[in-house]
Length: 87
Image (cartoon, rainbow, N blue to C red; front, top):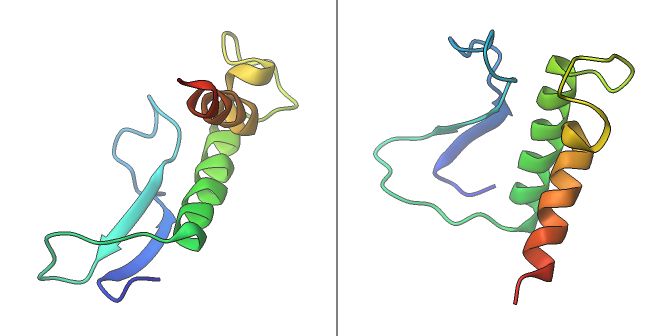
């Protein structure tokens, strides 16, 4: 992890968590104006994002418009695939 990042965690105290899923919160050591993330940092962010998304919209429950590949790891997979398929 970069030296200027204190932690990468689920944002459990998100004040808008009733409207959106828990998201990933990166706590920086200050002063800090920028950072560089490596593949392991990005993987940690992706893992936590999936966990937060699936806490809000569990895959084993029907939660309206957020079904199947429209949420959680499948939404992320679809979006990453779109990036790889861009010209």
